[in-house]
Image 1 (cartoon, rainbow, N blue to C red):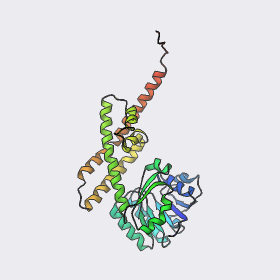
Image 2: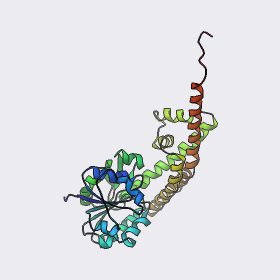
Image 3: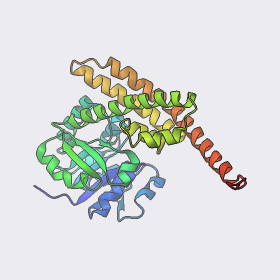
Image 4: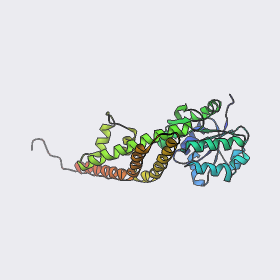
Length: 300
């Protein structure tokens, strides 16, 4: 098995930035390209080389990691930005974003024609998981390619699993996301009822988080999902549910019930985040008010 030393990374966002940082921290020679210079601050604390073009990066590394929004962005880099035209034969191209399994197969065939190899390796855990180096990486592709790339994945993951041939990583991630988003609908519904019943929502989330009703969706609503982040996540959730439904239908199954609940979960995310933000603000005000009350002796 050959050993990777030079890694290219494109997509230095909230999740991709910490992933690239972890790669450099682990001793790999990190090469990056970004559309916006401001994105480069994500790797400012680690050694790295910045490339002016995608083609220049592609000609300089042995593995190229892409952490982008959707499949259309991958195609743009491969063809319009000249990645494949400049790629070194045998280079591993990895897609860490979430997309369609059938598109993964098409991208893999296109990459192979250029003399490179492809893995679809979407990750779960978001920005917090990336910063904690605790992502889950679902991989689709050839076993030998997976083995070569695995040390790179392990720099930012605590779980790495080969899920079959190309497309297997995406299919697994879509099922993961479908469960997450439908669970989000459950949490949204229950929290809305709790608010109508005048329960303390932050306290409720905290205690349920230690109980049998706990879920990753509920925990995320209670902690990291602010109204601003919810507005960013909402269209991504809708996109992922559509990818899920398309992938399931292509394999002869019927996703309608799960799709409907997932779409509803995505649609309700912003309102749920705003509800919790108001509840947290109210709890904080109550705490301040209680602290400012005059002391009364127990003998009074």
